[in-house]
Length: 331
Image (cartoon, rainbow, N blue to C red):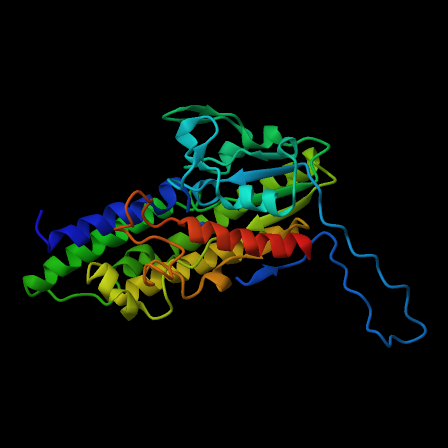
């Protein structure tokens, strides 16, 4: 394979992996939550009520739900069954459990690479066997739940593959003198005057809303945290040129970043509507996207470091997300 074609093919395959497994994906948490009542000012008026008692940090049991961004695809050590879930013993749920000093019996991680919201209530088939319905891990005794899911429902795998294809076709048109569009992928998904991707995100939101209601029904005493996806692309698409080359137009990189913001916005809205806490990961991960240097990035590029998954969090990314989630949980 030539040096010219390798980045384009790698980008198509690597970015397509984004939500095949996870998108599969903030310096703290946002949104309304369950508890975390703030204390009154020190010199509150005499008519003010008593200072609310802070909600204690959950001591477990803790159940982690989600897709590959939660599971820790290809991050060592890979643990648990089925093996097809590619679940890491160093993913953010495991690190959160460790940070809360939970006993092994008080922590269950049932996240799985490739999971969609339907896999929360039904078994998910993987190459290593079936992962039982994730919500089956919940009980009346559950006191802490984290949920990181939604990208696969929004169809981002197809979106990213289509973006790479549209840009390649557009480049060929330019070579034969038919002109080139500034953002062929955006044009494709807004044809007919309808934002097709926004419609997909909205549909995913409806499913997540139902899932959050079911979590509340099964574990009414649990504090629930919806964990967003990290920033994948920088604010300045031009800074991605050394990593991604010219395989996708800068305007379409901006378009993909916009769609990710919409996905995170939907997750925040659904979390707040369900009385859960939204944990913003995009803010803290700014500057640590896949186009950052190897020492700085929390998400791997389409051509990742050896042994890691393309366009997925690396070990540093999982550690960073764990820190953000712990901050939210501990208040």
